[in-house]
Image (cartoon, helix red, strand yellow):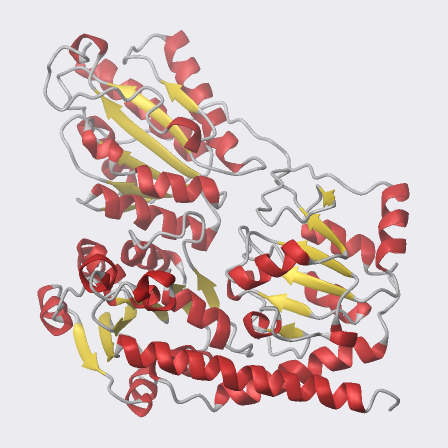
Length: 575
């Protein structure tokens, strides 16, 4: 293969990528990917792409994922051959489970160097298995017109597949022979034949709409708004809720809590844990939107719910591990809300009033919280405006679910809630910060998840990203203190508590971050008043045992508040 032929072939791939509108690219440097990386960098100089280089492949995968979750647009990942590609696997899994269009381009040894003991060669065929929508083995470079047209077509249709419902990651594998150095001549304006796929969406038939309207009109409907996986996914839900006088259990990842509305219910874990009888607040129908909610308590309640559960499921996946769904609607939330809005009759006023009273009492109690870890989401919901917030799994996302109150701050909240892992959280948050369009970027994370992805901090330093990381340091796995294994006192600390004795100040210095230590709520509020200028790390020290006790006391107190509201309504039922 001539140098000119290699350049033409790889440039054809790049032109096909550009033709499909891909602009965000993350490169993990290596030898076999040399021609792709060099030509992409050369193209980037002509404003075709935004390029990020991350030497840690696991970090790179999650950085790209964070970008895609924020922009809802495809991001291209590129790496060399061998285990580099395997390190993308966790991010690919998360992308598949949350329907994110991640484009993975792995370069590979040619066939004659596979399964024969050559270095840096593994079997990359179908490497990600069922966790990608499609796998394409590209041919070895050739410069003939037939091959070039085939490659352009195949690359484009693969990227289109990533963005088609249900969206998800795709994998392109590109074998390359040496020599690997392309010509870096001036880039010609590409003229590939561009594939397009006009958006088409399913709609309800007149008969289906009529049947659905009769099931919902005048009924006590509870909307369950889970995590949104695409742009403006649940925008019409609030208007429909007001028309029907239907309360909304608003997951923090639904993006509905960026509005201060009294139909948004945030005390779901207290109200649905079985210890409270809802009485006249008990719904007849649950209307579900979005992905699986953060609250496991709500899912457990659905398993015992005797009313009807309707799942709005444009992905046609029936991803409902509560097994409670009775009706699946394969339309988008926007189309459903638009169709139902003129049709439905409202629920009894008393039903809505009880829920609003419950939520008002819950918010008043939450605002008064003094407990260390539970107080952090309250402060964030009160202080932050027009911000992008990434939240780690384990305790942080649960505390945000419980205690981050709806407000008019227009804040967006993200989390990796597909596989629910703590790997790659720092990198995902920095990917978010790279494309959020605001300098107000925040990450709420525990010390173990922070430790798990410290390599990701280098991306903030490399690309001058503005992000504030709040590290809740309780020296170990705080969530395990709430689980049954906490009773195994002799083995708990080495197996589950796993204290790392992490010196967050030293880590901050290593990555050139501004470091602050917030020992009081006032400290944290003061630090959040400052405008981020780069990477800033705020350590909030906490005690695991004390935190467990505080959460249990909070739960008891909030139960009492909710019970008092319901008792008051039941006592004054005739009013």
